[in-house]
Image (cartoon, rainbow, N blue to C red; front, side):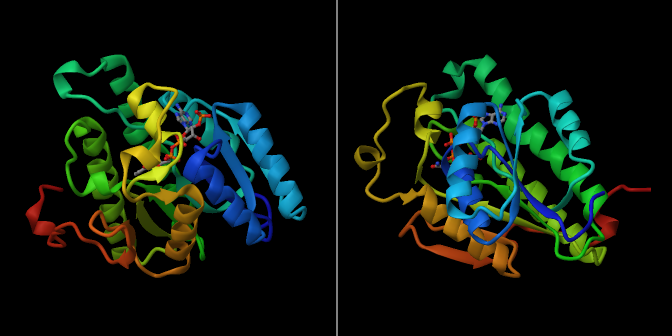
Amino acid sequence: MKSRDNKYTVITGSSSGIGYATAIAFAKRDKNLIVIARRKEKLEALKQEIASINANVEVVIKVCDLSSATNAHSLFDDLENYFIETWINNAGFGHYGSVKDQDLDKIETMLHLNIEALTILSTRYVSKYQNEPGTQIINISSRGGYIIVPNAVTYCATKFYVNAFTEGLAHELKQAKAKLVAKILAPAATETEFGHVANNTFKYDYKKQFNQFHTADQMAGFLIALYDSDKTIGEISTKDFSFSLKDGVLPYSDNPLQNQKS
Ligand SMILES: NC(=O)c1ccc[n+]([C@@H]2O[C@H](COP(=O)([O-])OP(=O)(O)OC[C@H]3O[C@@H](n4cnc5c(N)ncnc54)[C@H](OP(=O)(O)O)[C@@H]3O)[C@@H](O)[C@H]2O)c1
């Protein structure tokens, strides 16, 4: 591992939307970055933009398709020599349509990315960093991970998983008195490429679809507020689109007698 003075923030899915804006927000705070996505040219554009904002920040580009478990493991192995202060699992996508009509190729890729890669990368990060002071893992979920939205059942189910996994992890780390903390950002509608990808369309106009939505820059600001706080969840209200910081909201049994671990 490199010197702890030389710290990095990892952001998966940083070639567009919330991840791109978050990379810029962390660069403004003098954080070195490791930016990850499939589209190399978008990551290079991000690196250039950051160089014009804060030339002191190092930006490492890793091109990786995280819908493959093998790639997720190789990516983590490849980062062995960096000291990673913060890990943000942001890469993810959605799908709109009824379950009976859903394209299983797309759905299987979504399950691999939203659930499998996030679990592999979280587990490997926690195993290596749980006793390192000042470390955080932030998983990007969705308001759709607390309430099931019509026409997005499977996507919501992936985000229910992200919420349950990450809140559970946060409890586990607190009980183990670990130095690492786990957090969740749960956005609602945010103007990014999400709408295009989820609807398999090139044209998607957030202004026509929603009365209210956030920009990616606003969402990155909320993520920074979560990062700075000692709360577990940063959540957007679907009623008035306000942002609030909370402790865990899911029911949790801290009674070990309620499971079957030997
Ligand atoms: N926008 C919203 O309304 C909204 C609401 C709630 C939650 N969210 C969540 O916010 C997160 C960020 O989404 P966004 O809104 O910023 O959408 P976005 O603009 O489409 O960004 C998604 C990012 O994920 C990357 N990605 C997609 N497939 C990938 C793969 N197989 N391997 C590696 N990277 C991959 C994309 O990069 P490449 O295509 O270059 O790989 C891109 O950088 C997602 O987890 C999403 O579920 C979004």
